[in-house]
Image 1 (tube, rainbow, N blue to C red):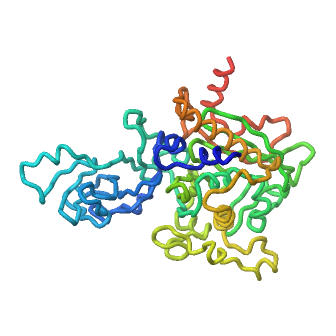
Image 2 (image 1 turned 180 degrees about the vertical axis):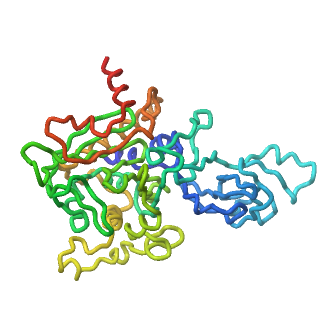
Image 3 (image 1 turned 120 degrees about the vertical axis):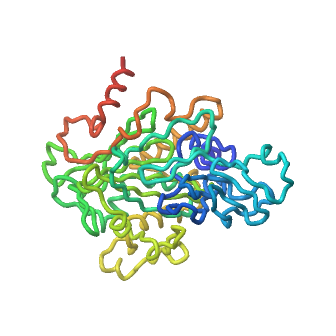
Length: 430
């Protein structure tokens, strides 16, 4: 990639084309547990270089406002959350969840300033384990739709949330890089002769030990699907072990499931050089508790993370890597899949210099992502529709990844694919 293409892919602040793409979708901004209390403390959230406060007012309504009061730019994070609004401490200006100023005690009673000033505010929706914001063009706002991890309103959803000190795109590229799991996670992701991938208390297992999968991909209007095809540990002559991963624009990855739960990631930019890593586990019937999911990922608040979701494992302390454990056979000496990945993402630098890389055939999905999203950003510059918004669309809730041992004559591109998508494919082929 050229430096200019790298900027198109990575930068999201201000009027950046990639930021415009992201803002054309509902953004998972925080967890409901962070703003659970009506009339409680406002939550600082930074997204796309913007500082916001999210709060639940005394009537239980959620609001998302610009952090800084339009009067004298004081932080509203310290404001009084009372009587259906957020009141600035400095001069008492009060804002409702829509950004309307409802009180200006420091101004004359007949002032028209209340009608002439509207504070920055974004529409909010609560559902599927997150508080979501619409940060784009209000005229183009679409109704919120459930994501793949919320097939029903009562699906059990567990979320690990981390603040990552690097650009969103290099985290996403890690999520779609199926080949790295055979090396980086080799002490925790074991090849054993099972029928399907399984999740145990401290490890995942799968029916293959093949470290060099064959990669194939398929472009779609919503992103792309690709498969890592490996030799299974049994029936190698007649079967493949197939793991399909989906990139769903603008920042979602659906990772191959296991027998216990399905897994997805949402990589939401904080700014150009930091992002939110949201690691989601769910199952239509069984599910996994939030406590157990965070414990498995070594991402328990108060133990592994501070209250702002900042990990205690950092580049400054070498991610608490244990060299003695490495000498004893552990591949990385770093506890937890997530932190093994984080060490790779962050040590590339705040924004990876992709022009200096040397890629191989195992990087097919990474190359596909870069080409597709750089083209999508250029299309926005040229005034064309945003990727993933053109009709007819496959609803996000209908998209799914796949893993399993299948006969070699099975078409990988049909595995785990919903009938809605198959029908749209047939329609497009006519």
